[in-house]
Length: 74
Image (cartoon, rainbow, N blue to C red; front, side, top):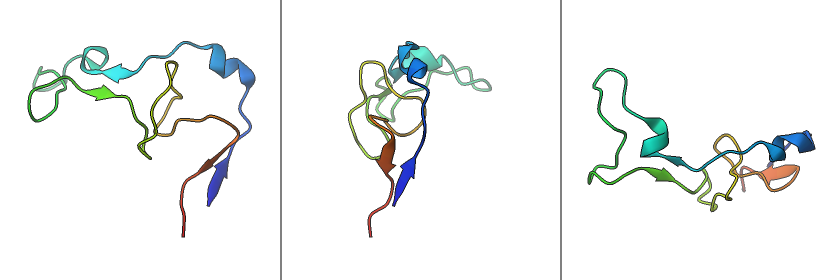
């Protein structure tokens, strides 16, 4: 099963960065940093399907490289 989207080519020109603990800041209620269970910084450099994120990552859980993304395989 695939998801297809018509994406405006201009969206690729917007600069985005890899999500890290520094980018996320602190949790609102506890005022603590986002971190892994071992205390190391969070770095979200892969997408939902464990595909490596690009230098200018796609917004959302999936790294888009084209018009269509496989989301399920039977």
